[in-house]
Length: 476
Image (cartoon, rainbow, N blue to C red; front, side, top):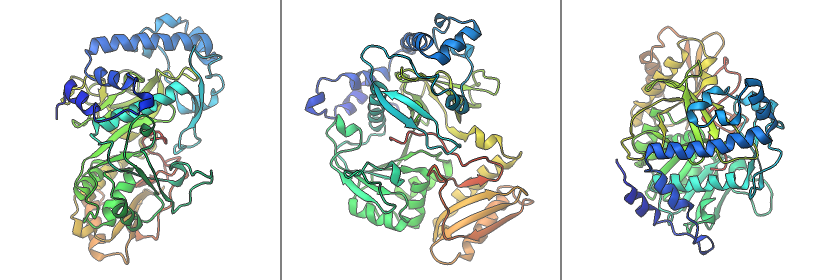
């Protein structure tokens, strides 16, 4: 489980730069940083943060006004420990102050790249202006993550995404819901490195069609939404037909322990995860020890409690991120709305980058639920995750919904009629989860519509204002 600097350097050597980028050193520096002395890394981060804050106060109307109102000078925020002197910025505040958050001018050498928008699963999408430098960091950090995941760049990489998130068509027309295609190189990292081909398919295709497509493409690596990976695991009824896959990556949605167990058992490969959001970019990647290591060159992460203080190790707090690489629209102490476990001490994996524990979901989803709902749903998921493969045969998709009258409905998409053994097992799982006195019914449906943001949720509630999901850049 533990890795060393030399092992990571050896792994990096598998990634062969294209001649046009042969002299680039950033990837080697990223490797070295992963094993830096924590005190030295903190000092380097503080230096960069100081420049970010000075630039923001001098050129961004929002921050100039904020610091004057608080009676602070830019020099008063000299390191991560000083960040709590500033208020947390939420998504609503970002949208309301979008123009005031734009820098009046950029540092020398920086140029505007364009706007990036969130998926809008929490309501109205947020838009952030990025520079070319911050956009390049996205690709640099994606490559770091693939190296951590031990993805071999020579292999075929397959992605299954909603049509609007697939690589653009050459003719500029939008993809259809049955789209499939190929490119000669992996997306993004293929611009810098020699890689194998990329194959892509629409997540709107039925699970059986996607399995047939994967069997034809024979990828070494598969990347898709957490729910899509579970859908594939269910669609094959426990008999994974694609023996070429050596690794998978779940993106864009929370991967619950039961989902992870089902996918890894069915596919026979580990499922890698990263964390990020369009407003900032890549934030952290999950190591083999189960921690999310922060890309400290790109951002600072705080896990805070309800009072805005650092959450104690072992407790759950809100993920607050400060970007370090986007002078066009700096975001300082940006509240992602996501929850994660705070940790302390060195990570068993050997990397010294800052880290946090498992992502628990979105605060907005949990905060709106009646008391006792979240534990009930979590325990039910775990109970379903332990059901035998034979019992789940024929199940293709499921979603649990809570109504305003506090009753629950489990919606099932199945191949053919609803098997009696399946309904009996799910009803028993509900009892085991503690729902004996909570009204519960099981219904078969032809399909479960996706929300406007395109991220499926296996649990929804009338008490939520909108569907939601864990953050992840749509570019990944």
